Length: 365
Image (cartoon, rainbow, N blue to C red):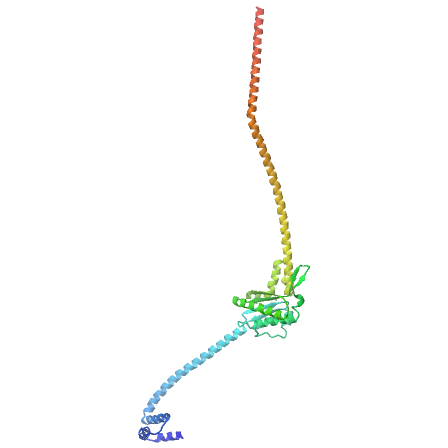
């Protein structure tokens, strides 16, 4: 109805249209109606059309510019969303660390930056059995590790009779063992996972009324690559190389299929054997040292005896030297006496001869 009235309004001349706005007439008009009457008047005078064209151009320009900005902003939001979604998707599926569990089953779990499992791989037949029927993808890593240990207990890889068994022949005590190794180049990730996963395994063992030795370690990703080339986890490679340090003749192939418990048992046996050898060698060394010490003592005693004899000889010589001046004096006296006696005898002989000669001469006369 209003639209028809406004159509009629456009048919009125400008004066009649303007009359509707006269306050003296005092028509009851709402604001919208007043604006439309004013618009009609401006159109009739030609003012509205020119001004309106100018405004329309401005609106078109502004509208286009604003629209372009809106479109650009929308595209930017879409691009950022797409990029963020791509980064997020990449982070969700890319492992930043690998967690290997070795019992006898050997299993490796890839972990993303959100500590969620993105891959699960068995390294031997026992590992395949433990993972059978278990989907660990997108599971929190501590829950996944707990599940693996629970499966290992259920499948008999960690038995009650394995707890703290004693080998009387080797004099060693060995319990069931769980080796957890984190492979990553991010130190903070390694530290965080080590503590969380050990706690998870300890709790799982306690809930299953089972005891086992839980050991953790962390290595660089390069170490994991080295172990994969050998077909074993980095955790098992570490254990075997500890054996090789004790016995260089051991080969990796000899123990790559052995359980952690058996490897640790062999390690303890070798350590005990090497310790005994060290004690024996030390005893032999001590014996050699004692013999050498005794020999040195004998030599020292002989040297002391020689020194004592030499000292005594020197003392005797000194005593003799002290005595010699007196002996020499006596000898000199004796020699002088003998010389004087000899001289006296010679003189007497000469005197006698002279006397005889004198007597003979007298007789001749």
